[in-house]
Image (cartoon, rainbow, N blue to C red; front, side, top):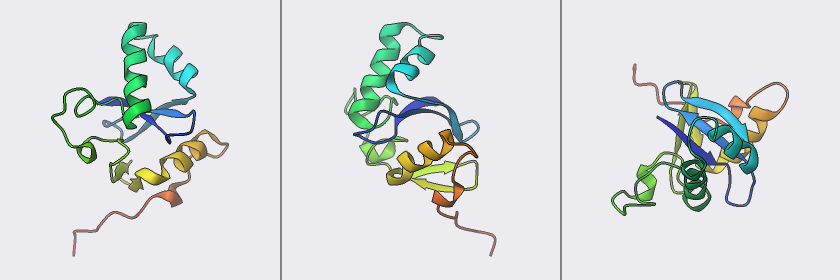
Length: 122
């Protein structure tokens, strides 16, 4: 699954998330993200995805359009607890903005923002 997350309600920063690689594959402002999305889909679909991300934190369909899914069940929604990043750890939703900004910075993402994964091997 590839979806768009908005970093924070009051920030002009978006990331495309790939569940295949468990990381972000594109980062940009709303305008940059719209240009990126319209390379592979009609402009009205791209705008609809960004509008969902603006409203709910995620472009994933569900409660935002159908009312059938609880917000915390959708990856990247404002109510989501977080995402597993590259099997390195959990990125809490409230740290997504800091993580995305660090991802854009020289040197790459700040993995110290991740919480360790539980080790079930005991």
